Image 1 (spheres, rainbow, N blue to C red):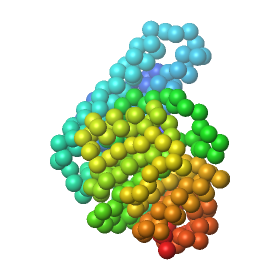
Image 2 (image 1 turned 180 degrees about the vertical axis):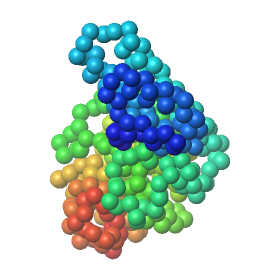
Image 3 (image 1 turned 45 degrees about the vertical axis):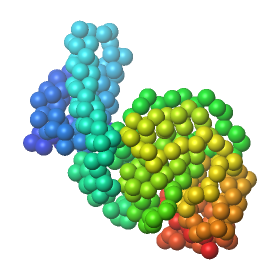
Image 4 (image 1 turned 135 degrees about the vertical axis):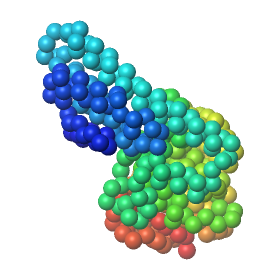
Length: 316
């Protein structure tokens, strides 16, 4: 995103440098039938991004260098109007998809097909290692599962707790693929934040999922999203991970929600759980190194030194 050019099918436009260029860009975007077709999600996201950074950004730069003119102000209003119209197309699309989710119209395979149809990328996780990060897939997943106004945190983190970051969408897809769910499995996301991992794992697998989250505002937000999507098998518990009940859990995910002694304490709790049943732990980020030190776990992945990879561990 934020590229210097924008491909509109039969027309390509480039970052404008003057008023006439801005006018031409806005006219091309405004008249494009490609961008208002709901299926062209990637193109629409790129156009919104282009307007934000290359059109409105250029206008703001001009306004800082000269006294505001009626022409520049009018162009700014026009650009914001075009951008809002494209955002409305996405909002309408996501509301329609969420309504179908509420009405149980999608299986996990249906949702995978939707992701391929709208995002357009090859969603085979094993082939995406070099492009893991935040991209249009994440924007699409946010529209499906994290659609309410995001709250501010109201509780201070304790020592060794790590600030919440969303898990990249491609990591979630890879997790679901490698989880190989079996009857009776229950998935836990430790440090579940706004709830996206637990919600998407449930939607893609059909299995029961739970999120453990220290921040009450995030936990309430995640619960509200799950409720609005009519997901009765998704729940969120506002708790310190060291005090949560994992007695029915078989699959556990951590995107480095804590470190140091706290991480080791939680791993000891999971070790105790593994005495009564086999469990698997999935990791993302720096916490994988600490998990890899645990002698009660076997590494089931391909590169134990790659913190940018999804780590997969199984109890012995």
